[in-house]
Length: 346
Ligand SMILES: *Cc1c(COP(=O)(O)O)cnc(C)c1O
Image 1 (cartoon, rainbow, N blue to C red):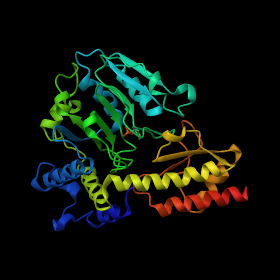
Image 2 (image 1 turned 90 degrees about the horizontal axis):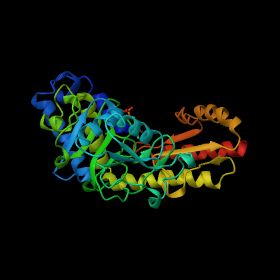
Image 3 (image 1 turned 45 degrees about the horizontal axis):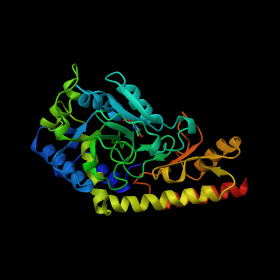
Image 4 (image 1 turned 135 degrees about the horizontal axis):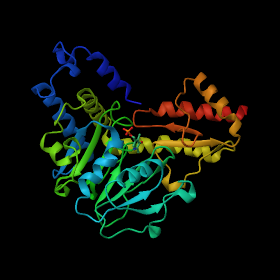
């Protein structure tokens, strides 16, 4: 979901941006107009997340999945390998991709618990020589979130695709943050990479220029044509987050929205959420029904009420309410009312 205000603005200027007689998607990415859009978006994101000046902010194509390969290509040259915390689907995909480029140590694995909890810190087996320690900040499919950055000594790398801008982040603790735009920032097709400049030296042999963070940073993310319209939309969303009080306010709202659903689920005899309390995601609230046979009836009745997109990910089934920044409190209240009524009836 993207903010309705942003969608309306994008619609109003769709064919005539800034009285220029052209759409943003029709202007040259190298011209002064787009340069201004690009720089402004980066400035606003830097301010929102208090990104230190010695970090590059890249606006790339290819999705978060491409970064599962780009990240090791940029950080593993001459290094012993990397640590990965395996807490669900997305960290699993990332570690399998990275395996093609170096020795990957699975420092912990939440699979025995069905990825419903983050393994205790005391159980992690970290390699002191690892180039970085990777984790997925919010496992979108199973609804599992790190509420604070893992406590590790070395360089941290993280996938924040589904949690970026939903809470403050101390960027200085990270070497790399990757985030596909399509959950909390902009339409699919844009990926943000925030990377500490001092980490970038050699890349692995064969690394394509487009995946080379240092080259992309030197070129202002414009080694080739970037996804310009998405970049523009991202800038509008950054402005929206800023106008609404920034990431601290997003966090307050996210906790309130998610809390309402978790409280309802915990008080209910019909709904269940298997995730360990402190690790429950504030963005993706997954739940199952005590009577699995009612799932389709739940989805049908919800759709009748205009509540859509509640089907869980095809990997694990069940139900999922994704309540990203743009989901208003009133939307969550509508869902909560519906869930209570459905339970009463059934
Ligand atoms: C959606 C998602 C991805 C996949 O992003 P693509 O842009 O489709 O590659 C990766 N990581 C997380 C945490 C996600 O939620």
